[in-house]
Length: 288
Image (tube, rainbow, N blue to C red; front, side, top):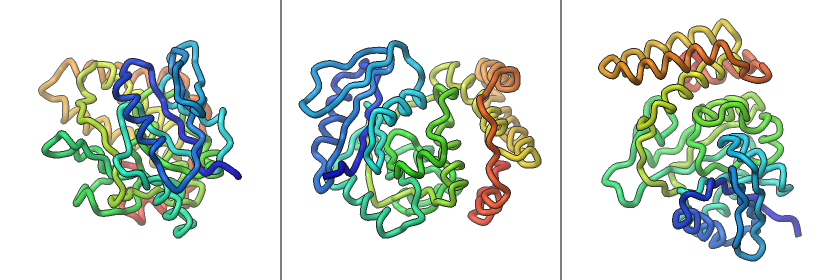
């Protein structure tokens, strides 16, 4: 019988307790069969449960490339990505995702609602839409929180996978755009839940540098220039306002901005104007 899901669990091996929790939450899934691949980003995972396979990478190649390495080692028709510090609290999450894909043939990617069971309130950044609203409200979206997402293999291949060069930051925006470009819908499922601890990503200068570099790369790789240049300009203005009281953050961001223009972002494959129009129709034209 064909396996339902290839589950790619990416880890650097630095959080053994959290990794064990993530893995156990996948092993507990009911109603689907899974081929679980643990990708060791810069190390070789050992001591895994029977039936769980390891893909050890000799160096840390970054989050997107690490996930792609896991996909290459699998063949199941559905793919589920899980970070090592995230977990599924309900044993029927993957089954319900399968049912949603079956009931909605245009769905090309599903992200569940993300919560921290230990926090009083969850960050709105985990709701990938411009007007956040009720986190339990489901809707089409144009970016995703990447730590727990499901996607049919055929759609993943059509989209070109995760953007290897990004290393970290904004890979969920590119994948979402490219799924839409495959004439599929990216869906935020407010009625499904994944857990993840609240962490402030702004605690490192590297966050600002990669954030800026990858914003430029997003446009260079994916957008027609009449919307790509306004997209870069808009986000530059937004960051300038956000960091007006934090000169160190602005210097790190500006260094990444320059790097985005001076470095090679990889192959350019602009999304179609039909996709741009579809994004605008849903209220998220690619200039913001």
